[in-house]
Image 1 (cartoon, helix red, strand yellow):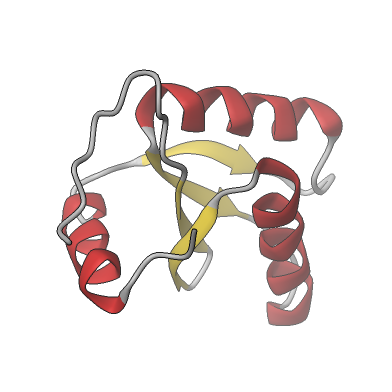
Image 2 (cartoon, one colour; image 1 turned 180 degrees about the vertical axis):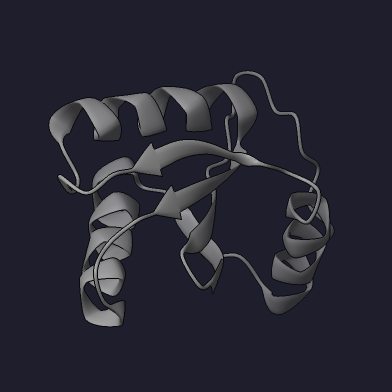
Length: 98
């Protein structure tokens, strides 16, 4: 289920003080990085990722792959940093506004 603009603003505020917990390095998006991202999303629901890709198009492609393969919602991107959200129905940590 896509998040609304109000929910997106709420998540941006929560993500502001977070540090990147997963980093995509110069070798690109590997299976192990995807697995770590999925595990971290399941634990924290809201994460920041640093994507050290060469250019903007390459970063956009990696971000799209992450969202597609993990099922996470892209909250925002700023430069090399992307914020993802994935609701955990078993152990929710974040309560989104209606």
